[in-house]
Image 1 (cartoon, helix red, strand yellow):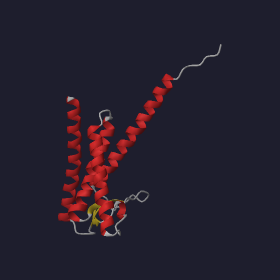
Image 2 (cartoon, helix red, strand yellow):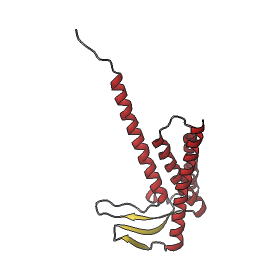
Image 3 (tube, one colour):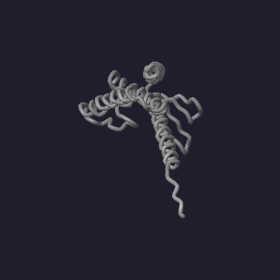
Image 4 (cartoon, rainbow, N blue to C red):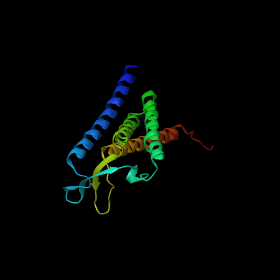
Length: 177
């Protein structure tokens, strides 16, 4: 029981750290970079460019009517984050990677939802361009969601590989006489 409480506390701390890093980085950008200003950090490969995204990923849904936008970009994601939080805090038999992945996704999701509710848009500012690999403009909440998703994928594939290996060990050996 004590380990379960420590695990829940760790999940909450990770979520809060993700939200904090996201919100602090956005606040710094809002205060010190002008809209659409470009600051080259590593030549043209890594650039800070502040934008206010009124939509979702890469501006999707930015043209929706206000009431639909409220549902699609604030209410539904909030309900999903609450459901995920309840799930991760109640599940007793999850792997550390799964719990960590969900905590990162929840923290990042809450960071962007907070922006939509408080500011009416999400502040994005990172852009990478390596010629053959180019990103849209994103923020730390997006990084948290991507890290969390990657951890969940590793956890899922690792679990399937382990389950497959255990099944192979349990298969009966058929011999012919």
